[in-house]
Image 1 (spheres, rainbow, N blue to C red):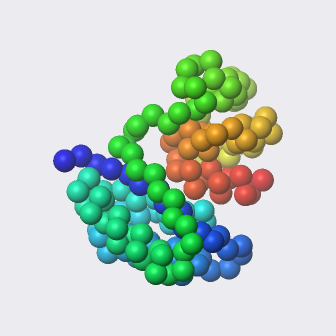
Image 2: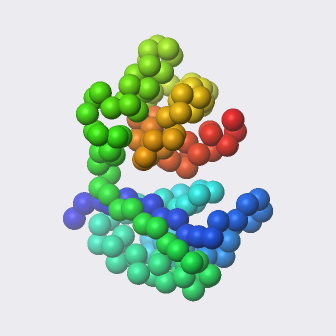
Image 3: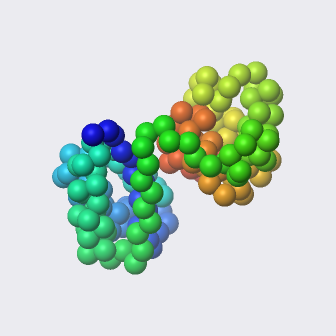
Length: 157
């Protein structure tokens, strides 16, 4: 069997301070299942063998709900699966914005160093890229980072 990746968010979100119990419990359930886990301010990303990940999903959901979550949102995909960027064709709005930023910075987003990636996110944000549906995930994929990293770059302004 192959690998799978999943991202899940549990609500309600909390502002500053420690993460809510429902988010911590969901992360713990994923770790207990042996999944590779990345815990972020807006959700959790996990990866692992297909059977292990699929078998762990009920425990993750139960842990979040038992911890007080009122909603759990889940996305599962195979690693490297394409993320739709607003039509999927090279002429889409987001693709155009990305190409402009790459031209301005002189290289592809994936080849930028950390400071360059932060600058690219700022430029895309200034152009309204993150108002587009699924844009954070699409930009994260092109940068070679997680969507949580993109959110962190956005929060650093």
